[in-house]
Length: 360
Image (cartoon, rainbow, N blue to C red):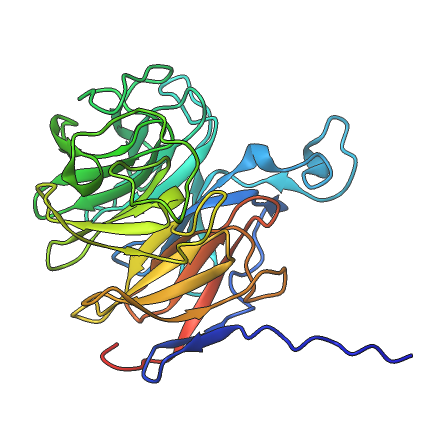
């Protein structure tokens, strides 16, 4: 008997004039050294259009890292160093990182950012990590913010709480942290000295660590962030976009923490939420926000002016162009998009901009 198959789920949808993307299944190129990456928990594009990723080597199973077992159980593979720099063609240029007697390397690597001086910043979300580390391009430690094993709550001005997100305002020489998986705030430090500047919670309120319980899409909007505060992005016009993941929303602020507006994205999403990361389109006006949604396995396209969802691409699955727990997103100077995935998926993908739409 012939079975009637369901119709395929479309990989992209959107209003006319919205940018369109196609996966580049040949990117990245094969890695050297018999390397394999684990959960890829951060991606950034630097001023040279090089793509930086950070992954979690400890997330590889013994069968995945068979060549690293003692004795080896297979020819393939060994864990790649946690931080990798790739060129536009997807070739590995640099790789470094890992435990050191000079600093606390995170037990769980989370997020990466490269500033205009080519400093590489990484975050952490392990139970005792609580640090952000700033390195040179070659992996020499420049600055540490926070203290491993110590956290002081969402109103402490020196200790962090599993900081999930990093963004540097180069002109002001300030680093913004989404802090994070334990704390519930945005906090700002001097990017050179690590001196505290300011912090705020949802709607610009003083943060609270009170347990708000699980997210309920039918309840009034929570007046505080839920954990994790998973992304912070600064637009060229100075607006700050904060991913309040478990509340299914993006909140927009001025740099001083004054609340501007918010948008809910797939607001009926429960579990661990719909807003995992945010990137801005590459056009001069940065007309669009691209929002990684790891629960619904897609990237939403939102107009920045009126915060309206106008399109999306991706769906759940393991094929090229599909997603599983899409965790991070970044955009290069040509408009191409790069995404990473955690859980059992563990990969980075490139999506070429094939239709610029209106104004991109």
